[in-house]
Length: 234
Image (cartoon, rainbow, N blue to C red; front, top):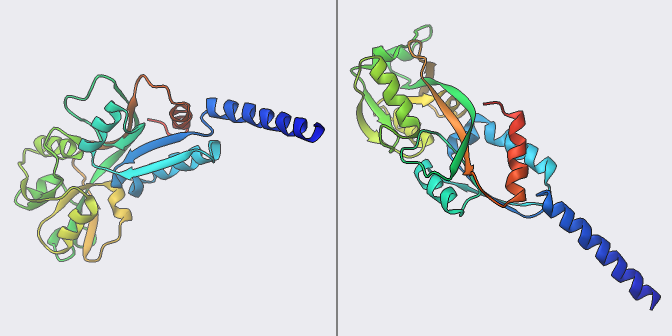
């Protein structure tokens, strides 16, 4: 019976270690939603790298989702957390948030546009007669809120002629010569032919990337993920 007794002892020790690791979130599951711009920005990459170092055995599920889909899923518990842009009107009361970064506003221009020339600075007020390509979100939500706030401060009303849920497709429409687009600074990391990116020099409005999660939860894996925020100042 000695070999069997030793095997039982080894299994009990292993079970105890697994339980302790699960309590620290080192194993388990974490479901995370994210917007595409978080990948361009690099903030999502840094968070995931830190989390993987702490919890290499945790099952991680990543889903590319728009802001207006993520927050309801976080609120109901179908997602543990989401990487989004705020604001989000009528945000559920059980959802907390942490700002990961703030981005300046840039403009994407067709390469033949007169403002796309080298050495030409661009102000938002220079674009008042342009046709705009923008996100599908309403003016009070996500990046659209930053766009409309900046335009209001510049006393212009953007003439939005096309909309798309993803910045990569928005910039593709710019490349086709269908208009200009106000974008977060990180979109310049997406190389699309026939598009020139330039910073806007006359606005201090920024666009945030934030983490949203249920304020009350029972997920050690999420707690461990939240501990990674220490390296990502708001």
